[in-house]
Length: 130
Image 1 (tube, rainbow, N blue to C red):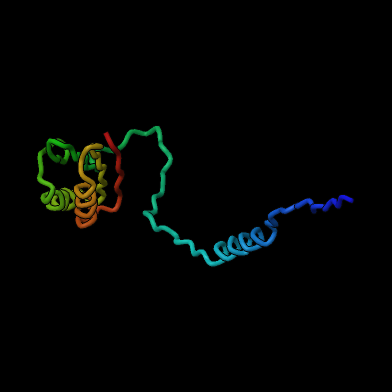
Image 2: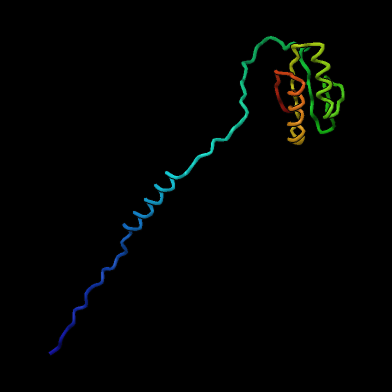
């Protein structure tokens, strides 16, 4: 007599439910423990454009270009901006500054120019590129 052995069909599956539980708990942990840093920036108030022409007698046009720096088309060194603007402000208390910077100048030069404008006590400044 022949005996047949029944082999149990193996139905082996990988149960991923515990792994999903662990991943979900880790996700919640990282979301809860994450701290977000708020980046500080410069507050800029944008004014509406008016159709009136700007009063150029009260304005100092400061150009920062690769070939040199100028105030109202008069050459000036980067360190001489504050002295020249202080002279202009002594003659005109309502002096405003328009800083036009070439896109190829160094950021350090731009920052130094803004600091010198601030040191000359000019409160209104507009910045543009060319």
